Length: 163
Image: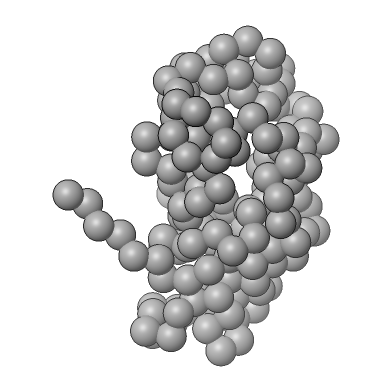
């Protein structure tokens, strides 16, 4: 059995799944706060030297999953693992956000596309030499990715959906 415990809570202006940006590219300038629980504050040492961080979190507004979904940027069913859809067997999300500052265990971030009160599982520093890839293919998203900044979430992956 796998057991995880949240290390904090992510606070954003997005109270409902509908109308949220679907990726950080659609949340440019949106500010949020990542509240780290006090027992984990020591782990924040040296994080302030990074301009961007990767947040790993629980898709707490989503339940169940389907192995084929119609993603936000398409109109035809795709295999779940070829999408970023939130209804997954292990509902783990990730977002790369800009880190503005750290104060008393609170991370002030920008370009956040996450539902308010989302449980935070982990933080990793974004390092271009590790994370930025070259010679990248984007599969079915090659054409759709140009519209990501304009697309908003709807309720198609909410907890009211059945598996």
